[in-house]
Length: 132
Length: 433
Image (cartoon, rainbow over all chains, first blue to last red; front, side, top):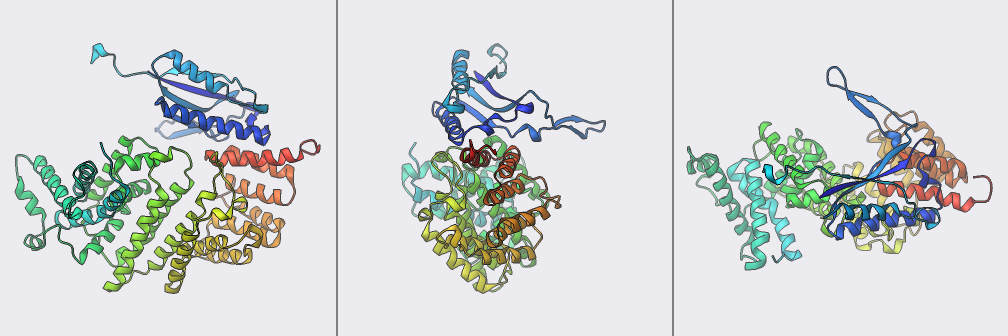
């Protein structure tokens, strides 16, 4: 079963927090993230992992009367924004939660675990066996 | 399953365009021929390690590809023409002529024409790139998909649509020569340059399973330069030949710095902080040789000038000992070929190195009025560097912050974040920041 693990960062006036950390802590955080993806990949659990560009460039798009794109944005007031996600393929929801917990403990300022919230959502699958 | 050793793999890639050119000469349909060659390459990768290299690898590939092509045509037209169709696809004057596995003087031209066909103007540049890597580079769909980190099915679809587009545009093979080739050479060079940059800037992904696009671009550009040189011996010379040499030199001179430009955690290391003893001397020497030949041949073009700039960096012992005045002059020459905001940005940095950061910053201010680059993270990043050099730390940090919020490249964002953090760390407690 596949799960999407979403990492949300604080938006609004708080900005992208990492920008105020000491260089050493930024480096440790980046190294952790690279190592984390490598480990998931080596375990055969990683389906995809992407970081998203900042909310400064986010746009909300709707179709206009003629189907043309109507864009809206930027959203500096957003409280939270999606900073990135992993999609993992695992045997149980417990395993997905364990992976999420590991990501949550990524090192922050002073090397202390950030314990940031990771939202875990199961990815919808194809038809169940009785329909195929 | 045993795997091909790297020498056999190189051989396969070298033969891919030759085999395709040979098939196209007889059967015309680019899409079908390309599929057949791809299947033959896959068959070779499977059978050669088990059965050993055939005596005549080229002939083997042509035979297998031809068989696949015939099977395909047969099944496509099962009820009707059957084998007659294959015969009818061959122009009358060639039906009694050479066998497909017979080498010939045209082989070089055929391979050259593949480049032009893959860079057909009706195709998007993403499709041109994928098709060039497959038809000329001999890469499999799976390899190209991994290199660009897109699903294989997506890339397969992109390739198949590209081939339909070529067919719909009614291009017969070989592509028209002469004027048409000259007109298309710049887009061929641009595609090769894009492949190179993609490989050079991509630091993410599992290197073990990724084809090295930079090396691939260099190999295919080298082949192109050789083919163009051979063309010259055969008679007509393409005016763009010197630029093909310039592009090859630019790639070599840039790639020479590759291992020094990232640190152990994939972090970017800027030119002025790189360990120059890790630069590849052999590549630099080769790049300089090729550049000298291209410049002597003329006419001079943008790739040759960019290669000349890269050569000046490559041969300088350190940043401060770099001949910035000459680099500045070369950027000014480059700008005469076209008003390119990225070249103007680089010129501003060179100007700062010659006349000081303030002159550079003034030149960047002028770019704020250019809608093509105004507000881009590159402009912010360049300004941040110059402000840092000028000792205007708070402003530099603000510019780095603006830039890292806008870039869409992860390694670049990390680099900009760290650059700002470094200034902040150095002045923490000083009270001003």
